[in-house]
Image (cartoon, rainbow, N blue to C red; front, side, top):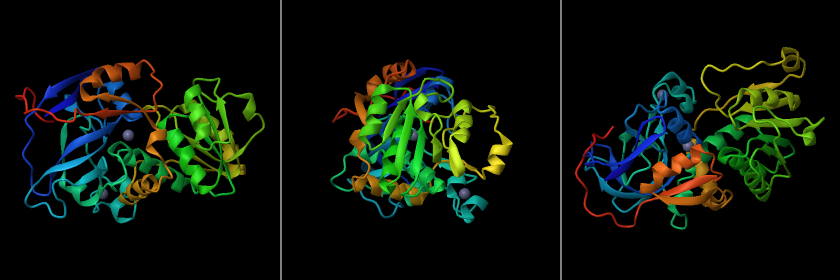
Length: 354
Ligand SMILES: [Zn+2]
Ligand SMILES: [Zn+2]
């Protein structure tokens, strides 16, 4: 089987592997759809991910496929089933897991290698975070489950109410999913972002107002003058936007710092504003087995439609060029990576599976 392998900063090669044998509890998928994600772009630019990836290694973590092989000691699944795995599973035994915060598991097991022809799903993900795909859903739509689950988690933590007005900072895939989900609750949504096409998309997803941000590192638009919001969802991950989020929330309002900033960055916040306005400042990380299931339910019921977020597609061989384009700032929300319908026999291995 072939996979896109990250070798370091801005270096991806398509390589052939001998698929590793399955261990008890595991199964193998033929990957039918993988999606690009902002995290993968960050990983490509940096050449590694502190918690998940040390190159050389296969990467990509949003995928869906068909089961092609099941270890005899893996129960509950059979060959031919259409499934979507999450990109992680919690241990269920550490302290965060035991107090109901499995997204913060001390021993999260991550799965990477979506940009490939096949993948082995580890036993823990098979038992906790592998879901059957309803017949009417495409693989590409099902592959949105993981990023959407993070946003489900983020809006749940924000406790958004139907009568409220939410400000979303950022109109990338996460910001746009936040718009779509917030509209499901009935809340009014204003979004501010940098890309005109994505702002138009935000309006189609139900945002009441979409503003073009005039600042690259903060928030600047005359349309925001004097406005304060019940809740703010920061979906970019820049210190200047975190600070702006706190300036744009009303007394008693809530801010979710959803976008992760580069390691080591710090923000400056007005302590009297936080204190006398009784602000709730929070952050969300990752997802849980419960929010993974809720996300797939949203996609299944059509309240979030894959076609709104997946607006480009390439074959696996084109992944190196695709990431080079993304690093130069291509405007697609998410790109679908497909495999050719039938792949001939496995070429010889020239690389060990990471
Ligand atoms: Zn992702
Ligand atoms: Zn745990």
